Image 1 (cartoon, rainbow, N blue to C red):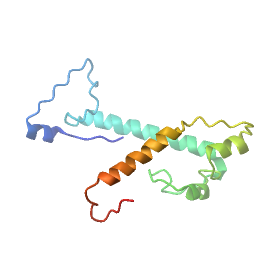
Image 2: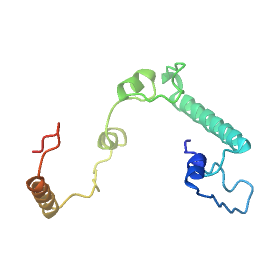
Image 3: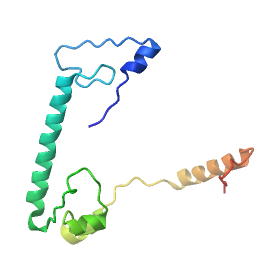
Image 4: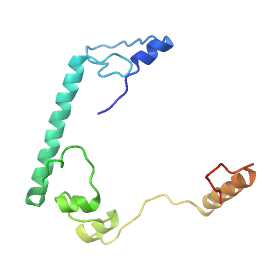
Length: 144
């Protein structure tokens, strides 16, 4: 959970915050209002509960495959290969490989919208025109 605090910036600019709510916590962690210690404590407690639920689900779901480390649930991000080593994943693959190998789907349909020939051509034409109309090349960048 993240956010910004703009209260001092608003004061410097002479901007007045007008927040009208129908409940004591409707402006919960509003970035334009000063931090309310009670709301901040509530948010921290909620995040702790969600984090613990996440840890429990991962532990239950991965079972003995999980090779837990002190850093595992710290918020760090793991590569695919490291996730396999830690037991967080079984292997590397794609949507198609999972559909084919795990679910045993016979027909895999790709619904990704494809560019038409006209769209590809117009994109290339636009890039070529932009290059031709550029009066100079910025230092350190070479246009091709």
